[in-house]
Image (cartoon, rainbow, N blue to C red; front, side, top):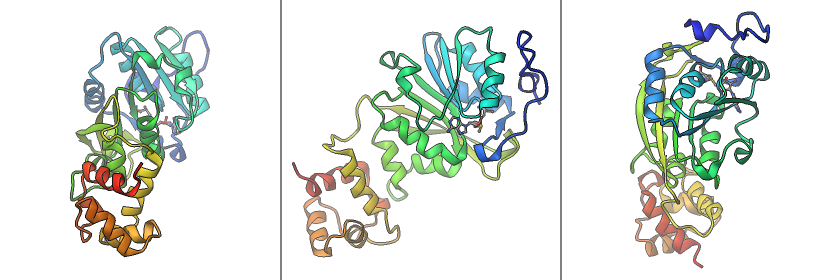
Length: 281
Ligand code: SAM
């Protein structure tokens, strides 16, 4: 284990001892591969003026590198024991603030000057990666850039193209442009997870790619389309929207979409057209 990872003792605090055992229930798979670490940091293209929000700093391996490259780092950690150790470890780094909190609910505006823009960089816990990414994409104070480590299947789903689209692909690509930076094998972490991971960078748009009167209604429609993956859109939407198949066919015809197509073949613009006819002004 690298020295900085094992060491979480600060001379002024007296908090001594090895780091606590990884808690699998919190998705604690700590990064130990320095090359992977460099790829995460490089992908974020940090400048000394950048504010960074890190989620799940864990034992601080990424936090340390972010603090070197960015102007300011706010790190939100759910595990109180790890957060206390990190606070001690970074006590002499004025540009690092460690906060005990849950990334699924934390109030970002209270942590950062969001009007100045910020980047989110994280090796996310698997169990909550998708809700965390979606939450930060959808919020008003969204980051400009996200660089996140997630399960490779999730990364592929975010960056999917027509033919392999999913609800997550639509939800990601509505707000930003995702790109898979690298695949990361289980041995890059301790304990090693059972799955392969990937680093994803999402460049978040200033405004969503579609002009929507109601994002809630839009996602009702998309969710209905994907509610029966193997089914033709006509049937999936009829079931998901509780609407007679003839009415669904009429909507699809007006949107210029063949009712025999499946949801995974539609691109974002086609979902936008369908939304326009399904939820007119
Ligand atoms: N950044 C460290 C690294 O790369 O080694 C740790 C990454 S580990 C995959 C995920 C971290 O997220 C753990 O430290 C875990 O305690 C923390 N965590 C889990 N759920 C969280 C949540 N809802 N909000 C904030 N942190 C969370």
